[in-house]
Length: 278
Image (cartoon, rainbow, N blue to C red; front, side):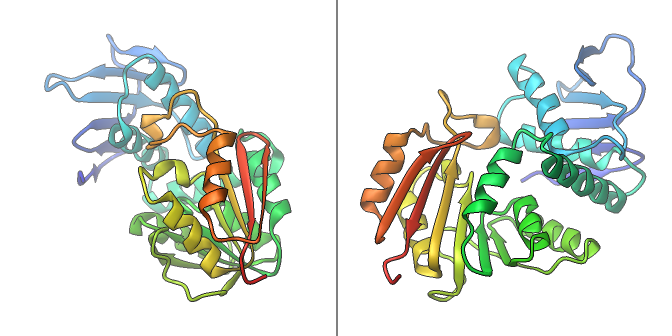
């Protein structure tokens, strides 16, 4: 894993450089970004985004344009570019992350984010007061569930993501209990949450999906909620390993230890399972 550096609104990693600056001659434009390769062949991205504008949806939309034109490739370069855009939009890492969370949550709550319908559906499927989000990443769903009054825990395999979520929850005065954890070996006892969610997580697993689902069923008292994207080709820049369909969800349900399953489509696929002990 590369070790980035940040100096004067410039972010350097092994795969990409991101700078908040004017656009030098010779740089190509793509949306709100401009880019060129430096003398070493490293991709150099320039932008003028500020803390008023930076958000998850905006960041992804701009970077996907670079993916589609062949400028960005692979999950590591995509993630390095994303972090670079966030950390160079303001004067300090803390102010940048606070703005990123604030603007991203506002997009979700207003419905402007493409992910808003998924959050809306997931929130409607929660049962009971205690919720565990598995694979929380930045933790937007965990924060929204906590703001809605649920007692929320969240885990992710990335320590950095867990730290960011914990800090964001603290800034927002929301109680989200964060923990580093692997979906295939959850660090929680049996029946310790009412609802366990796996929202756009399982497509990231190259294998062991059945184990992850049964781990969620072990921890859940009342319900497991699974959401996945339906893509013609799995997105490598997002780290997706599987092309998923409704038939995939049927197969997963057939292999899981549960007492009832509901499968439906709404901005992707959904599998809602009832734990065996209910």
